[in-house]
Length: 206
Image (cartoon, rainbow, N blue to C red; front, side, top):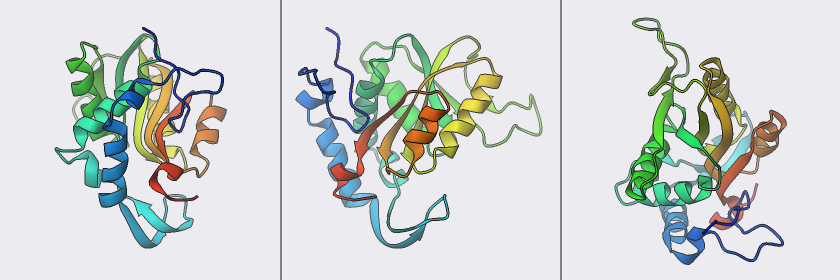
């Protein structure tokens, strides 16, 4: 049975009364609670963009937690499940690494064959000089993952490196969208963009 296409912030699209798979489970609700309780910090912070913020979402506080990683894997596998013919998932180290690992394991448990890859920030200066680590991705459709999106710079840098390897970017998918312009920037570059959780889900505002 086909799943409905999720809205970028997790709601079903208008005109489609079918609910995405996570809506009949509590994985997404549990994930939102863990992020709210353990990964949102309030104070004065400077973001990657240089802008100031009164809160900071440190998703690695939960993405590397044994209780939460399986939830991330479930939610993100649901989110990207509508994208056809995807061979692998991953993104720029290191925010994307635990997300890709979680997806790989949860997808495998469902019988889905997603490999994972890691994109270094710069090519290695020794050995084979690779920037993309993992399986051969030439000619394969991949999804670029990220934990939280702010400027969109990390997924776009990963996409650039992947395209040099001959990969085809099927989409960019993030766990939490901060609603600070990443979606617009990534879509302007020609890539579909999906986010599992938005600021409203966390009781926050841009």
